[in-house]
Image (cartoon, rainbow, N blue to C red; front, top):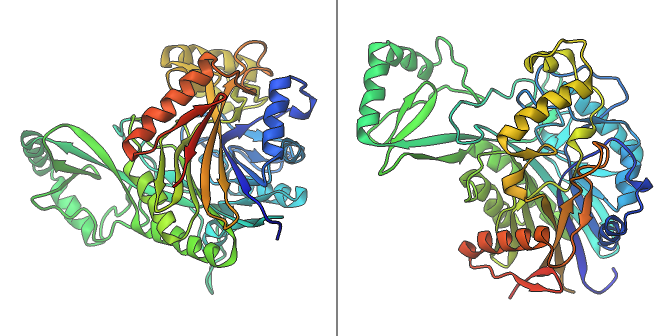
Length: 467
C-alpha cells in the first residue's frame, strides 16, 4: 500500500453521446485533471449503453421523459475523463427495459469500467462494485429511489419491469435496478381526515380496502412488492386511494423508505466494509424537490454510515447539505455533472406522440417542442434554472493515512449555456468569484448549516474540515 492521503471524487448525473476528448476548453481540461488526479473518481451513469440491440421501454425515466442512451464508445470517453467507477442505479438506465440493462453491463465490462447498482438479478444489482487503487480498494453500493415525485401529489407507478428478482429452482432471475422504494405520507387537519373517511365509506372503498388487507380482490399497490396486511387504519393514520394520511397541525408530507429495501442495501454495505478499504453508498435521489433533504434519503445515508460506509452520497436533481455523521461524510445532494440532455439523436414514436407530434417527426422537432414546456417550467438544457443557477459542484473527500475522512472539498462548476445543442451542458471549472461559483458555494453552505457543518471558502474552493 502506498502511504499518504487518498482522494475520492464524486459527481452527479452524467449523459453525453459525443466525444468529450475532442474538447480543448482550458476550464474543461482543468476539470479533467482534477478527476484524473483523484485516486478514484465516480459519476452517475444516467443512461443506457447499447448499439441498437434492445427495444425501448414504454416510458423513459419512470415517466414521459427523454430516452437517454449512448453508443459503446462512451465507456472509453468516461475513462479518458478520469472516471473509474460509476453508480449505475438510476431512473434512466431502464429506458430500454431489461435488455438495455444487460447491454449496459456488457459494454461496461468490455470497457473495463467498474460499476454497481444494476445486474441480472436482485442480489447482483445490490452487491458492491469494486475498484482497486494504490491506496486501497474502493467499494460502491449503488441504489435508486422509487416513489412519488415533486410535491407527491400523484402516486408513482409500480416498478414493473424495473425491480429485479432472484432465481429459484423454477424461475430465472430478472434483470433490473437496485431500488430503494418509498411512499409519501400526507399530513392534513382533522376535518380533512374526517372528509376522507366519509368519502371512502360512501363509495364502498372501505370494503375494498378490507379485501386487500386479507389478500383478496385487487391486491396490487402502487409501489410496494406486496400489499398483504398493509393499509392498517387507526387513530394515527388513515389510508385513502392507496395513500397514507395522518392528522397534523399543517398540510404537508414526508417520505418513508421501505424497510426491506433499506436492510437489503445495508447488508451489502456491511459486506463491503469487510472486504474493502474505502466504502461508498450512493443513492440516486429523484424524490420531491423541497429545500430540506428527504426523510427516505436521510434514512439511507445515515443507515449506510451505521452499516460501515465512509461516504454516503445522494445524487440527482439538487445540491444538498453536507453532514459529518459519526466522523464520516454524508453528501445530501450531488447535482448533475456533465449533462447534455439536448444531445439525444433518437426518440421512439410514442414519446413524440405524447407531445402532440406526428410519430414520424424528427428528434430535433421533438427537442424544440419540449423546450417550449421547459421555458414555462423553469428549465435550461433539461435542468431546472432556479435550482442550479447553471452551476454544479465536484465534491472530493480526502482521507488521511489511517483511511479516515479528514476534509471535503467543493469545486464549483458551471454548465456551458450558449452555443449549439452539442455544446450546451458541458461542465467547466467555474472561475473563482463568478456568479455560478458564488451561487453554488452559498447554497451548499446554507444547506449544510442545519447539520452543524461549516464550509469555508479558500481560493474559490469550499472546504469542510473534519475534526
